[in-house]
Image (cartoon, rainbow, N blue to C red; front, top):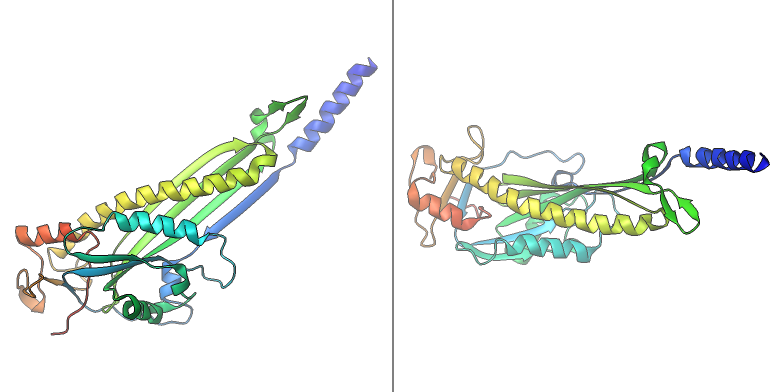
Length: 286
């Protein structure tokens, strides 16, 4: 009887301990718009866009809004940037795609920072990648079914969730016009032992960014298709957005349209748009 009481007491103590919730949270975040338009910066309406082949493209991660230690390692950032850049390299109409290190981006640097990148790297277009990764690991009554046996002990498992979003905004530098944007997403859930939480979070963080990058590359192709449809009518994103004009490598317009714009139309224009991939370029003043 005493043994039974002791067993019940131990079970009650274990239940009380495991009913409490232990939570680990971590977030990695940056924002391209916060970088381009820092606090108290007045947005300047974008000008019309004129594209000129061949194009040079710079791609980089927008820095975190706050100054200080960035837990998102630079080696990981550069590996992801190279994957995105490789998907566009070697295509007709693209002279060069440069993966720009994060050290060249100042927090709240704005378009002044982008102009300096244009001069330093000789780029016509900047593609800014930002990120928002939230990781949660918690234990409690809701994860009761995750109990596992390790030796002679009952060890409660952890519920883990990692959500990752990568956004890319593509800007024509001289006109300050956003040409198009795309987002890639990843959601990972699972479990681990309490002593393995940190390692599990690191591994799922890397996996989350990798999966979001795969999705982002696919979504960039979709965004390009939508952009080329609008550009064929002579605008970036439809009525009320900046006009788009494009010249071939000989400096000749693809087609002259009304209103001073040079809309992209016909098979030749569409072929050039498809070959561009990251379609943007240098504004030419008439």
